[in-house]
Amino acid sequence: MIPVPDLPTLWALVIAFAVFAYVVMDGFDLGIGILFPFFAPGPERDSAMNSVAPVWDGNETWLVLGGGGLMAAFPLAYAIILPALYAPIIAMLLALIFRGVAFEFRWRDPGHRRYWDFAFTTGSVVATLAQGITLGALLQGIAVEGRSYAGGWWDWLTPFSLLVGVSLVVGYALLGATWLVMKTEGMVQNHSYRLAGRLAISLIVCIGLVSVATPFLSGAYYERWFAWPQVLFTAQVPLLVGLCSGTLLVSLVRRWEYWPFLLTLGLFALCLLGLGISMFPYVVPNAVTIHEAAAPNVSLQFMLVGASVLIPIILGYTGYSYWVFRGKTGHEGYH
Image (cartoon, rainbow, N blue to C red; front, side, top):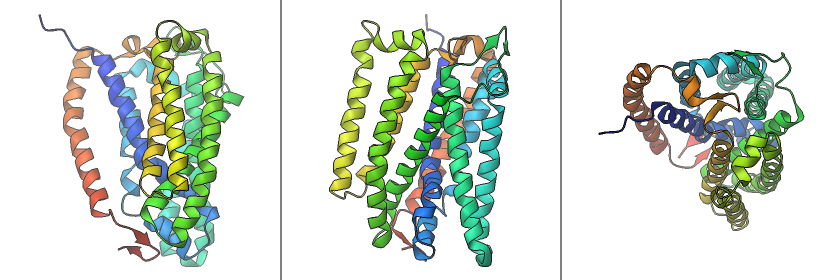
């Protein structure tokens, strides 16, 4: 007898992949916006902007897939999570719109470029901070009564959610710096190396603080990380984080061009794995599991057919875009 696939788990993996793809595709883009004030107006900022100009506007595809997938595959979770996190989610969406407008107008309205640069940075910081706060608020738990959100308007705002928000700002800034190390040369690249070194140390500290705090948010988290025998598996995650962090610092000291960016993505992947260990099988921590929140199997099957067609297409045209614009960039564009 052929076993029936666990469709809720499969869709949880699809959404996790979309979230990681968003970090890969849009993290360095937002990071460049966060770092914009550290680059001199003129050629430095133009070079940084040109490095993402051909690809930036397709990066939010994965954010739409993650949010839309949550609504379609896990409607109960969507109905609980959204009311709990309306404020940071709306702030994130408005900031993404704001920075998108600034991105375009800084080229077309050079007389007010410094204002558009400020808007670009502000939108990037607010969007990233809101994403981190949303993640931290979800991880710390959401008050649920029956099938509805039972908390208050400000429950999302806590020291832990702010810590996660600041950590994500540091992480995206490091992605932006290592992207520029990979895509630029000369003065901009040297400046990016210096920024990346400081940001790498800051991110390692932030990961350590969040990792220490998370198991104590809930007894269930503590059990998933430290109960025997799963501690034999979970202990490998901090070991890999330490190995990846050390290699990242070495790569920056030795001025490798491609490895700093890839190793930073490795740190993000390990953090996502840690998040999965803490939460699985819950989609609303310690309140609603992925199976309780899932749509009917027939709906999940129908959507999976569409996702199995569309995701490879998205990956294909995205990969082609990055391949076409694979060279170095300067203040006048790619060369």
